[in-house]
Length: 306
Image (cartoon, rainbow, N blue to C red; front, top):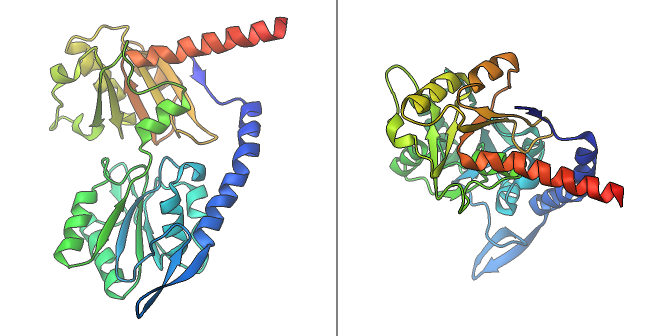
């Protein structure tokens, strides 16, 4: 088992490639034109549509890297009057918000809520009722363990128009960052996303249902539950040497990962702690990471010899 970090040379190469894309995202957010629909003159964008006053947009900020933000999300960030954002929104994404726009931090961290969920809904309704266009910016995809349903309910009850703008969820970003798929014909025909918040004394998951060899399991918010997850899956029948991968800060320059087995991962994590946020991937597809590294290393060695 190894600790994996992006090489400095690879990071410099990516930075050189992605710097123009960051500039493009800023231009998309800033570029507007005037459109007339009958007697109604509204401000729009080159991509079509507009950020409507009195509306709330529940936007996925992706995994933290600005270049992985959707074009629509970048545009809305440049147009909105107010942005209400979470702890897991990356600094690169926040940098796209114009300096004169209102910002409200409502982040949550492992049991410590800076703002109760009900008050977040009230804040969104209040801002929209003032005639402001509001972006509710959530890390990853707003519909994946983001409590979006509660905020939609609050907006609907108040009659506030809303729209959902999806983002790249952490599961996709983590596996892409490690160079492997989430599913594969030879490894996993199913994919299951699980919140590790269930791995508590009063909320045990159905371990036998999760202990399958034909699917990929992805646990969100589970860094403190690694030992319980490994024990639960082993107790339900998965072998001790079943692959598991932990990926912290997926898609960011400080991305780190541990690859190992259910039996050894708790001790390994204790010896080499990873920061939060951290995603847990369990399944045969994890073996593909090491296989790819061997292939790439072999190809490079062959090129060097030539």
